[in-house]
Length: 560
Image 1 (tube, rainbow, N blue to C red):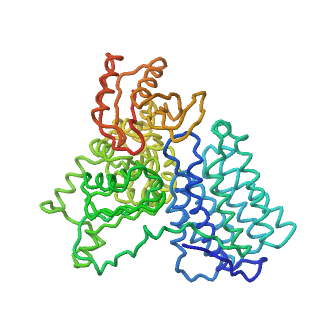
Image 2 (cartoon, rainbow, N blue to C red):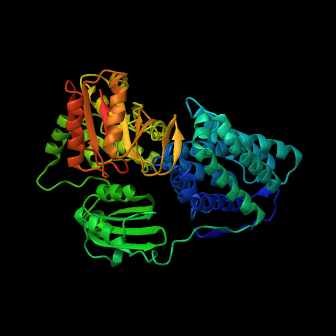
Image 3 (cartoon, rainbow, N blue to C red):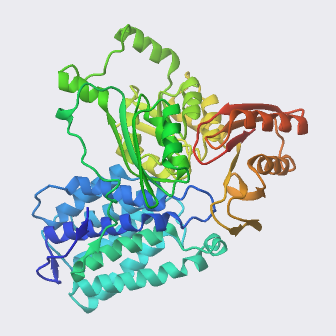
């Protein structure tokens, strides 16, 4: 990416090249505004990722058409939509992929698109997106795509000019976006418009600017952070993972970040900063801790993880992609016996290394890194499903923003996949305790869903802006606590906020077990101190503190 300008021959018909140009401009525009969209978060918590998810979804889609020579406009859109479906991240990315899917199905066989065809595509995109959401809510991205479809149909009835159609649709989309706070009270209370809707408006803006012949300039990587990527054939034998990413608005200085990366076991560390962007490059045996640490400092972007071990083995001719690497001292029979003894047919998403170890200890066959600010893509989930040997698989998304991607992965998989719609990691842990190897996948999924519903989840973090939500006044840098997804308490520090919300919950429900999963902002000592204070207040309750390893959130607390 860099900048995209229009070279269209006519504003009455779109060729395959025109569609490619429009999509490139749309991708560049959402990428340029991703931080702004991320900031449109209802709750003042440090996990706004709608802009990042929509950008990554569009970038995944672009890979499907980049370099492909396709003469039919409909086929370009179909390939783009398939890339979006597999690369969709978060609810916003999944809904965007469904919009693109519907549009592609409408024009699949057309060599060129006129205004009427484009209007039909927007309408089918709306219908497909609504069908993909079990309980559609107005005031969201769904409302915006409906406004676009309505305006495009009206414009196509008046004129064959595609620029007129896009400009009319963009105007209607912007007007409707401004009205979303009146449609959805939680937006009005937070003083923001819908993030997904804003992202879709930017995508349409990019398409419109391209058709007008205007340049769509993308925010370029500062020269201080740029640099040539080494070619594989220039490298010696290297092992582990090469991890690279950008961090926006990281507070620690470069030396502090390098020091922490070293403590995590990193090697070949390079940290550079230009403006509000910090570039991190590090080698390590496990990318998880380095990605989680980066995510704890700010929004991540341009994430690259390369397996240097496989690169080395492939270069040596010692790796075959059609078979797994056999660990030293372990034959295939013993590995299979270990899997059968300890692994279920469950795939679980975990937001940190501590949670990953918990799910593995409970028998999850595959654990996918992901959670707030780092939603796995549909493709990530699909690959994990395919690695499970059994034909039936249970999938635990463990985050409300991953549920749609989980459903999409299930629909794409050749296996029979049962999605247990766990909305938090504690719900996923509780669901694992309900797993019974003697039962079939369908019955297990039913019982796991019922068990997950009995858990209360508390999340304690730091407010990133001033806000008033649910009658609670929050100031930037306050410690805040959410109970089952609703902001309910604010305190001077994380411990005080956690104590407040648990006292509040004790008035509403019985408590038998409290499990504190402490994340990267907290320490084990702080978590143990909180556990002791809770035990003193509630002596009849079993209290335990475990490492969760999650970014941003001091504590994720399970109450049963």
